[in-house]
Length: 109
Image (cartoon, rainbow, N blue to C red; front, side, top):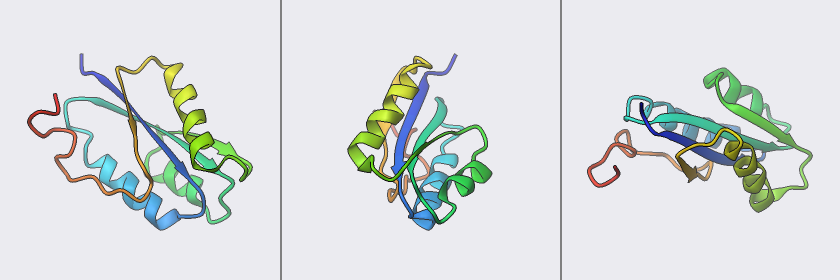
């Protein structure tokens, strides 16, 4: 059984950046770990949450009202992810692009 990795993200009205990050995460699927995304969309009005769900339907998308900001949104994502008892947590900024082998590199296991 592959280790389970919970990827935690927060976003607010950065649809293009967030989707680029999610696409770089999707490229990691065959990396030897079970990847699950937990995203807190803190009140975006630009369709970010819907775009994430369209790109990665299995993602857990939680919604804030715009008052969480990054730290509280990440805490909400982590609390939700921990309910599923992952083996590892990865805090990932929504403006980060992972290298295609970022979760598979030697020394990462």
